[in-house]
Amino acid sequence: MSVKVMASDRKCDPVISKLITSLKETESLTDEQDLGFLQNLLQSKELNALVNVHSKVAKINKDDRLAPLLSASMQVLLEILELLAPRCHVSPLCKEIFHLLQTPHLQSLLFAHDSIAQKDFYPHLPDIPIEVDEDEETIKIVQLVKSNEPLCAGAQSAEPIVGATIKTDEDTGKIIIARIMHGGAADRSGLIHVGDEVIEVNNINVEGKTPSDVLSILQNSEGTITFKLVPSDGKLDQRESKVRVKAYFNYEPENDPYIPCKEAGLGFQRGDILHIVSQDDSYWWQARKEGDKTTRAGLIPSRALQERRILHERSQKESTGDAKTENDDFDREMIATYEEVAKLYPRLGIFRPIVLIGAPGVGRNELKRRLVARDPEKYKSPVPYTTRPIRPGEVAGREYLFVTRTKMEADIATGKFIEHGEYKGHLYGTAAESVKSIINAGCVCVIGPHYQALKSLRTAQLKPYIIHIRTPTFDELKQSRTKARARSTFDETNSRGFTDEEFLEMVKSDERINLLYGHFCDDEIVNEDLTEAFEKLVSLANKSESEPLWAPASWVQ
Image (cartoon, rainbow, N blue to C red; front, side, top):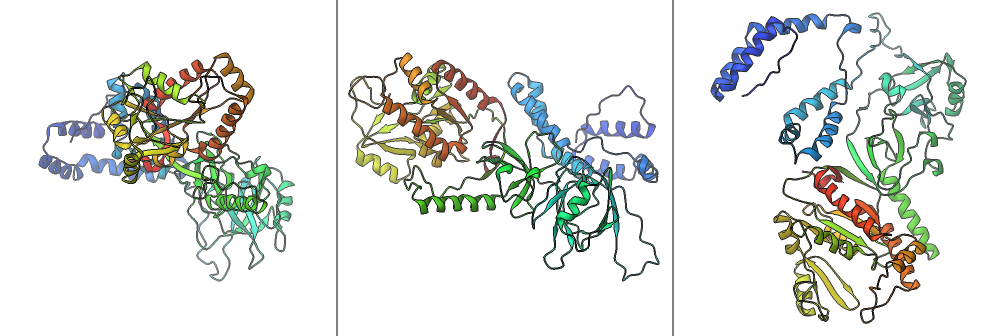
């Protein structure tokens, strides 16, 4: 048992001083002595003196009690880890602190602190009089200050009111609280709960009124708003969820005809990281954008709702004949909505493979070649297998490992390849063992597979860092390749420039890859200028080695 106590310029309380002295002495104790020491400590006068002090503090008026200065210490710890991570390889002190801050004991302590700090215990409602009639209905009166939080009228659904939504109960016809918006005024008060029945608003009885009528009362109110409520039978848990997800689609609440309130919606783009604070509603989750300092959460469609929308859109396209049925263009197994993610921290001596995908001819193989040539001892690319004949100037085992089709088909059947495909009648593939051997050697594996291989490459075992090499617009693509005198990769027998048809096919293929597989990618590079694209590739490679990055939660152990 080892305890380190930092000195302070302020004079310590005598009781605290004795405890510090006792704790310092434990550094040299054995395990058995530790147990005896702790038993003596529990019976010590010093510890009992601290308990007495605590008892006296508990008797102080509630308004004078000490309160936590911070309710998100775990978030601060994560931010500190992000700042320390890039410096771990240059500073032993930073590395030691980095590992200490990840210990489960410290993180559990901070988590417990935040759980307590985020509860709002005060103010309490007055005690119920002893002589109250047991048959009389319990009423609570809540006053909130009107803010600029969303107010909107919606038919037969819910309307936000100072951070809460209301609806008409289908069975009783009464106005009830349907949803509490996390971070809103109602949530911060801790006094309004889902299921509470609204009796009066600013002394106006709402019996027989619609949610729109109540909204009008709120809109015409100024300053403080007073609610008279009948408490619900059970208080639902309003603690924030810790789930983070990566969005796989764009969402604009102002264009969503089904959202309960457009002003309460949260818009986002594909690739944004969202903090899901509540999944209580089957159709509408509450979320904030990661890193957004906005207090109030917004509404987004749930995974189930978005999947239903996507399936409906697909069925509509099928009925009109617009849907494509190739595996490339219509993967029926994949319905991309959200993926739960977590921060994946760099691992000492183990680097994530860098996977470059892109349309044929976009230049990903040239970028891969340049990255390997930049530092051959660090970056290595596995030699792929192929069934095509060897070409003049090629060396077996350098560009490709040449095998017969029968042999390669047999190896594919036994699962030897992590990715394989057929191009112009020839099979190509990368052996799993060759990738693992590069990783185990402490090197960065760089591969440029066919984009369909992402289904088998994107696993918790490999944890790849995937970069989409994008084409610029048709005009920019044609201009840049003509200026660089780039040679076509589509004609194996003739060295020539790209045709307009080939440029158009590249742009079309790039858009198809982005539509179907772009959400799998960690980043993208637009290859308009090869030098600039390579500089960005080097920057992203360094980033994957040194920074904590968002990855599927299943990858983080």
